[in-house]
Image 1 (tube, helix red, strand yellow):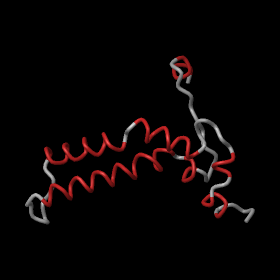
Image 2 (cartoon, rainbow, N blue to C red; image 1 turned 60 degrees about the horizontal axis):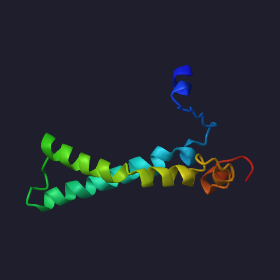
Image 3 (tube, one colour; image 1 turned 120 degrees about the horizontal axis):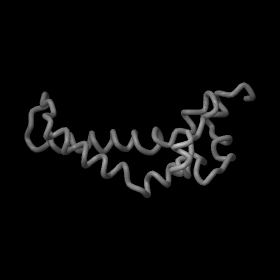
Length: 107
């Protein structure tokens, strides 16, 4: 932890049962990454490959690289961290989440 702090890396610990609301990677990266990857593979299949085509290494790397470039944009990452309320810190955003309220004992 000291090494992380020395390099301006701040560790965040999520409260129990809130990860579905607070995980910016799930909200901003993995979903769009899968969507972009699937669309690229669909484009490859439209070029005349058979439906049972299994993506070879070259096709996989091409599709994944393209999808990663689209999904991991700085603007996308910043926007999703902001949307979760994790940075800049906004406690009201996650606390107002319908997903969190539906799973709480207080509703």
